[in-house]
Image (cartoon, rainbow, N blue to C red):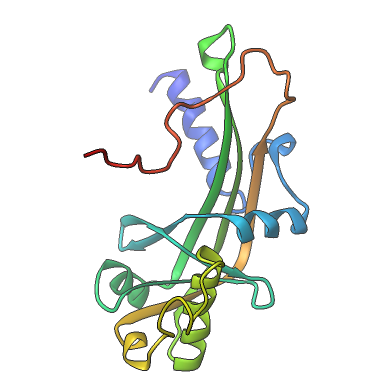
Amino acid sequence: MSQNDTDIDKNARYYAQKPKNETRLDKYSITNPEEIRAILTRGGVGTLATAHGRQPFLTPLLYIYVETDHALYFHTAQVGRTRANVAFNPQAAFNVYEYGRVLPHQEALEFNFEYYSVTVFGEIELVTDPAAAERALQALLDKYAPQLQPGRDYRPIQPEEIKRTAVYKLGIQDWSAKRQEEAEDYPGAFYYAHAPIMPHQKA
C-alpha cells in the first residue's frame, strides 16, 4: 500500500466517524435555522435517498415543508421502490438545492458554482389518516399552484383519490446546510446555459 493510499484510508476513517450533519468546511456552513427553513420552504424539487440492504436509491420528488411539524411531506405510488424501501428501512435523507452562477478561475481545479444546499436526515412514516393525507396533498397543490383554487379551478381532492396514492411524512431529526455565494462583481461569473427547466417542444 502506498503512502497516498494510507493517507486516503486515514481520512476515510476520520470522516466516516464524524456526525452525519457536520460539514467539512465551516466557512460554507449555514447554521441559522431561519435561513435553512427558508430554503426548504421555497425549494422546488428535492431528492429522496433511501436504501434496501446495501443498495442506495435516489428519487426526485415534489415536496412540502411544514414548519409546525418540522417535517417534509411528499407522495408516491401506492406500490413501488420507495414504498418497499421505507417498509424495511424508514431511515432516509432528503436534499434540496438551488444554484446560481458558474465561478471561473485561472486554475481549472478552482472552478466553482454558487449554491444553497440543505440535506435533512430523519425517519419516514406512511400517513395513514385520510384527513392528514388530504391536508398534505392540498398543501402540495397550494405550494406549486397557488393561483388555482379547489372548487373553482379544479375539483377538490376526492376520498378515492387519496386511496390511490401513498403520502409520506419525513420527520426531520438532523439537517446540514451549505452555501457558496460570491459578490456580484466576481470576475467572469456567468449563469449555466441550461437551467433545470424542460425546454418547450417546438412543432
